[in-house]
Image (cartoon, rainbow, N blue to C red; front, top):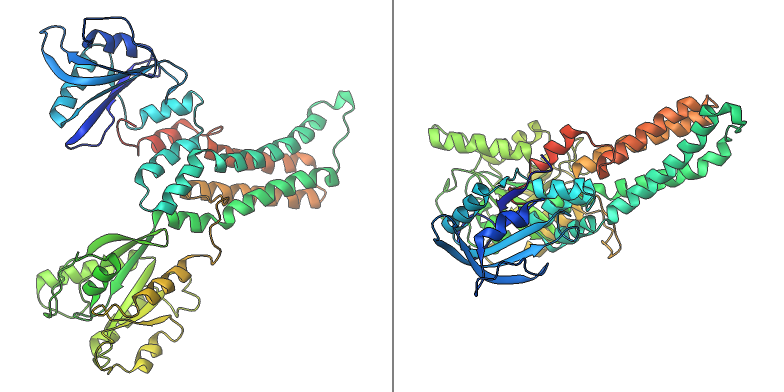
Length: 472
């Protein structure tokens, strides 16, 4: 299938000023050139990597489909390292579909999701980690997330991985040479000769793992559920953190009957804020559905903002919410529970006289961070953001030369590599035969190779690229 010429619309669905149809493969030029008419009727292939003005014309009927700019780009200096043509037309979905259909009728086939980037990987332009970074660049929600995705796309993560893998391969080569060629009197390497390279690889892997959780947060964000009984100001808090009027706010308790999810940028981390219906006993079937969704949102959250009305007494409903969260696995805050999911207490409406006994709240959450806020005046919102940031960040500022692993798949492969490397070092220290050391070193190389693609299976490639959009 890699010998096929593929085509797809490369710009997002919808209407816009410009839309692009991308064609890649051995027959890309011969497919598009007969459909392209330049002023004066010239038919020669235009210069490579230069936009050329003309029209796309159906050669059977002579109908002009669109006025376009076309770039014919010769391999290998293209995204896929194949001949590529990009047709830039007007960005209406109907006209782009007609151009694409004409291209398909003249010899191309429709590209599969991610197939252009898959070809870039198979043709050696990108390794697998860089290919995955393409989607991270496209989907980045914050400047920091974009910066880390660009670092991965540029190969900075891959360079560290290759360095670690080469160190392990160097050890493997010395071990296997002594095992495979005994007739050449190659002496078995001593443990003290192998340790430095194994330690070097271990250090590189541990360095990448140390920042992996922070990197994942910059990429994927933090699911944050805003929980509390009705009318404590949950929707107002959502709006305040978003700096926009996203949720409807009224003095009537129970205005929110469903979950509302939006993303805020918190110090470079996408904060997935989930406004929930108040958790309270009710006979209303619609409210019951909303409360069930509130519980589900809390259960799936990384962090809960537990909101109280500081101008009212601690109620039986407040107690019920606290007990519900503890049943869901949120713990006593200082250790953030075994699941690592902390609670931040938000005492809202501090612009009014305070009536809430904090001791009652502390009975459930003695160590949880507590912030006093007013969504009406804005008091305490900066402190709340600071508190959330301190919970999810390592406290170490991200430097311009920081290299963070942002992908969960990469993180798991690094853990496997670290475990195998540790096992190999332990085997070496025990003085066991080098064959046993070699087994774990090979497994560590396999795990690192799955990140960059050297040892990735066809099933893994299919799973990764199927998540891409068509046209990329």
